[in-house]
Image (tube, rainbow over all chains, first blue to last red; front, side, top):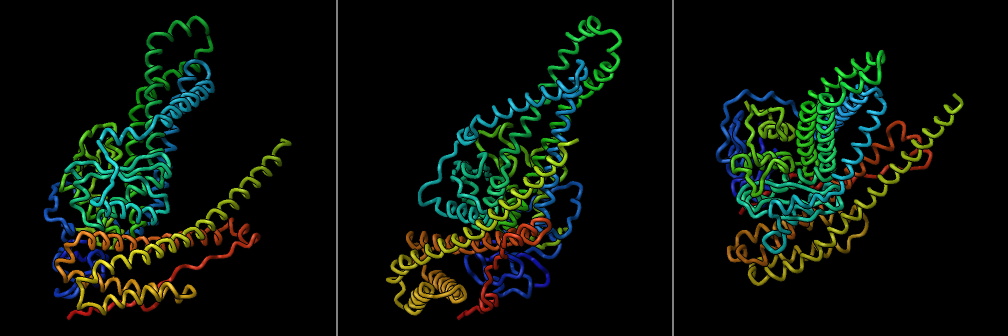
Length: 376
Length: 182
């Protein structure tokens, strides 16, 4: 096929690989009557509508930067590097703050050491306080019975493709379309999807969504999230402690104990003051940035598992137009879902404080991986 | 500064152990991935008789299609050697596809709950087979990459870690199947 379009199956709406002659899902011949390379449901060249999506979200906003043809392996590797870098920065912010505060009180090394200890304690607490709470918050039930056979099969398929043990499968009885994964290790992971998602996605799109969740599981993103959240919490704690101490305790101490030695301390004190104000904000921004990077990474890895980025792209488009609302949604768990259930991001939502990249940008990248030229 | 050589030795030995263990892990993953393919193939053999049993009453005029499926299953079961087996498996996949195409033509068969769930099971198993093969090939690639790249290639050649072969489809199944629309 010259146009390189993903032909939609005229019968079941499934998105197929470019150049496919038969529908991957129902086995129907794809190009039965249409002209060469122009199946009935496929959009005309350059259209921005999504295959299998009746009402494309027409958003007015700054156009997306065109993305060149992407290889999912390259995309995944790039994302791993990016999130590692961001994580290092987050650690640096934390330990810089610890050192500066220690310096303000006379000894930078003690400050560094104490911040290590603080991190270890907070990290251990977060790690051992179970993660299965999230399932009960959203009213998830284990997916048993005939009606969820396809869902269980899809999860097993993708677990094979990802090379992880099959996770437990849960459904959330809700009309909104969303999904999330939880569990610190692949061996104890679980995947939950809403019934609205199961009902409205075709098999191939469901595969994409489940693959995205399994990518989170395989790369242990829950652990990533816990680490990032703990760091942000620790930075906030240190800053708070320092700022309170600076106003109430410090004056008497330095003037009483030290005379001339206060010069180095004063420099550290100013630095610590500055950091205590700025670091919590910086840490929060970094945490959100990591979260967005992990989403991109999971998308790329999902494309690697299914070898079909267009399935996930089509699913994301459907989720956006269908509404990702989930019962029990709250700020504490919003980052877990495949599409943020609280906010639907427009193209201008490169908002620094958002947990997910704009869905349009994710779809665009996926389509670039699928060999579909960027729209417009 | 007397401890610098000691540190160097520890670092080199540590790297060596880590690299060797990584190669072993990758090699075992390749073996395990190959076994997973067999598990799914076995499951398909087990499912086919059930499906045939359910649909045969409805499909009095389609005995030919059913016979082909059963024959292909038998051929795949008795095939010897990887190449012959791959060919027989490919044939079995083709006959199953034509069986599903026939099922589409019988509304009462499509509405049958048993048929629908068996069809979903077989579709799932077909997918699992191809994903298991894909994962096998991915594992082989990771392993071969490790064997060929510096510096792990030194360890690999010293301990005779041999490259693994990819699973390749038969030339016939690579060709675009012709639609037989009557």
